[in-house]
Image (cartoon, rainbow, N blue to C red; front, side, top):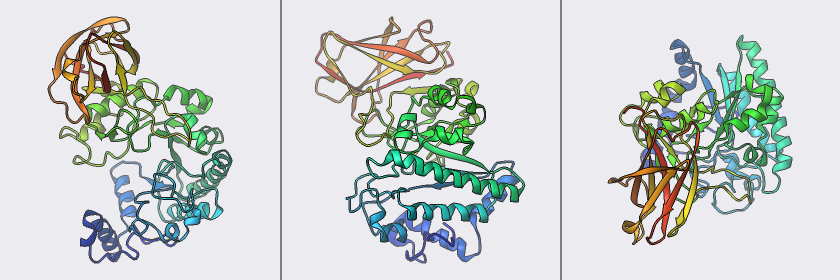
Length: 440
């Protein structure tokens, strides 16, 4: 988005004078080019303006962006990516997710990205530099991830050396953040050994994050803290929430609302997170439905006290990023048979003084209206409520059954919710959440 000396500019070779052929994307190219034509560097302007407003300015760099990999001629691709298919994780591969990302096992790939890091630190004056390893989260050829962990650790040593150099020149610290997979095993298994980086003093902010398919409501903050050990006092832990919600792999996703954000924030902060991180929550409009008050997220989603006091949803999702060949864990979908029951362990954050409700989304199958369910929380019965009339935006849901959660039965953190199918045809549970209304 600026005239770099080491990478392409987004407008290079993309007819920036005429934005019309690419619709809204064309305006991105056109406006970036237009700013450059007028001698305006937006990042320099934003950094200065942020400091004027008492906001700490950081730069974020996507380490392996794979947008539009299926179209070799898409304007977002650099010449480096397009002219070197031998640098892809799976050379000559088709357009499937992740296979055309660049392979950091190749020295030229690492040098290409380090050149931009060097330019960003020399050209700008940020308080911090974030390396977004989750865009797109697969950086080595399948089966080469173990060797890749050492390669990325060496890369991070050089990043810290450069930030320390420029911090001394600028006269203030330049912190280093990394976004890595939500689960430590997934991060290490894909070559992103954030724990080793922390123990070596290479990072200051650790952001466990999903990729994009769904927000992850069960990021193991406690496990991250245990692995960090004494370094958890120095390295801030900020679990990230994506704006997309999906209950299981392959399920249709939909956008979160403010209550979904507050549920994630309350649960993560109660687990011991230092901060919360919202990814892809760009503005009040699409793609996120924020009940007309985007600013409420800034006011309330960073504090346990304020997040827990909001109307909040705690939703069953799944961790969406794992090494190749790993069986991924997910609670849903689940089939309930007559006379059988199924347990769901859900972190519903701080217990609500006035109770909560369980929402069970049943698949839009022919027999869904005949479903007869009972529910218990931690072995205590829940009273059935009337169905939720509006089943949107829960994709694929034909009926949303609700149960009241007695305040005396709910515990802080994890609760076990038991669903029992009575004498009715088998039903598929494709959505489940706990809705907390802190006010009576």
